Length: 494
Image (spheres, rainbow, N blue to C red):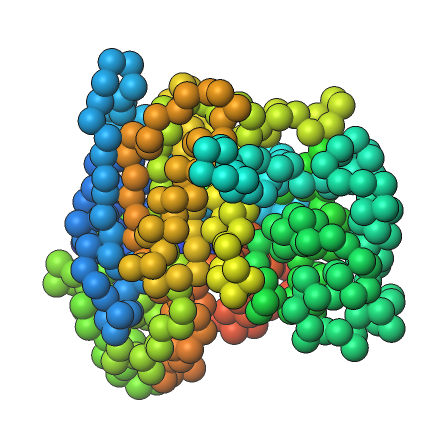
């Protein structure tokens, strides 16, 4: 197609973020004429995976101090680079694929069976997320921080020498409870709004050092004093129930080659095979609702197209079609390239198990009223960096001015916990702030659908797929049983 000018479409989808990409895939076999555009030069939108040169251009774009008044998800981006010495240096730009959304996917996630039923799983490769750690500060100024591995089962607990037999029995009692906590409301419902550490102490007599370990399994962004029992229990249950579903010793995975961006890109490729039309470097400059459930869109470049359905996120669609979103509290985030493999973070966690490519490290704050830092460590097996390096993703629920120092200190503490292994400062780091646009933006027309962005959580939430299904149902009117269920089609397996 040489030009889009004057064309008519059933659906125009704006942005190749994961939700939009899954929707385009779901519509690609519906007989609808689908145009999928993205103003960026790359797929993935806010979940993109960037090379070094792309990250530098991205940082320049989002270097400002936005308050999300322009629907911008990111702000305050800045890069720091360590001067190269000898073999400790960055390699070529394309040797890196740095994920803006390094969220883990629990093996119980509804997304994974949807990828199978849509026949896209064969184009994806997943790596295991193995150990959870808590990073504890040294006992004094001369002591190095220490990594404490969080036990995830009976064998781990009774091999752990860091706490006594009484604490082990209390921990086993709690794990048995949380395995089917829904059936024991008498134990926890009266304590639902109580801070989770208080619940652990009062109901299970668990010592304080174990509070941090169990809190790490929740991946909760809130301070311990604000993490309720009602919020913590389903998160820990999700973690424990996921272990062993895909193999021994792990319960979560990450997509290889760039996190959620890889799923978005595979969905777009499969959508194109199904008949959708994709155009990058193309956004919307103006939206005109002509009536009769039809939109006339002026695209960047001057082309005009018409569509019966317009779909995107609050960031993609202009304010004329939306009530403006109001940004909620966000996260300060960083991505660091480390000139070491850090194998201590990726041990095999069970006999006969795989070598993980991901690890989760919780860095508790000094007080219960401050949020923890979460670090998602990816080895070179994740396909995001050269074989002698690894990538460290970190985040904290603090404003940028406070959060950047917390992240730098947390990453430095992790590198200092090497049991004698000398690890230099990060070769390259980008820090930025991600606003939470949430679900506050609403379309002013029933044929303009706003897909909520991904949550800022460190684990992919199931409501992402539910939001996509709801949009698909509105557009097609079909039954849920046919959502993302495709027969094998020529070209899909190529």
